[in-house]
Image (cartoon, rainbow, N blue to C red; front, top):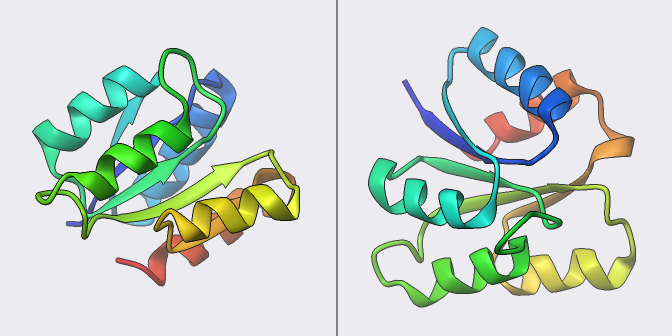
Length: 120
């Protein structure tokens, strides 16, 4: 079973996506802030990280930067799932090593799951 770590601070989003991923056969763990997320990445070694950008404590940009600097994590696949929708934000995430950037408002939860399946 593939392991997904979702770093998201919105309780409704957590509930929706956790349910969808589990229904699709994924093992899901959740972190609600950046610091907790970084700890769980190192501890749990997920197959895929779903990362929001706007987070308490440590934002998604800093998490991406730290992942790419850590030799043990540099190959971790990261999909950004955010409401930030400017081209510059999308470009920055992809340049920092995200494999995909999904704008929350543009995808249904089912479509997000289908996108995630491409990477695990």
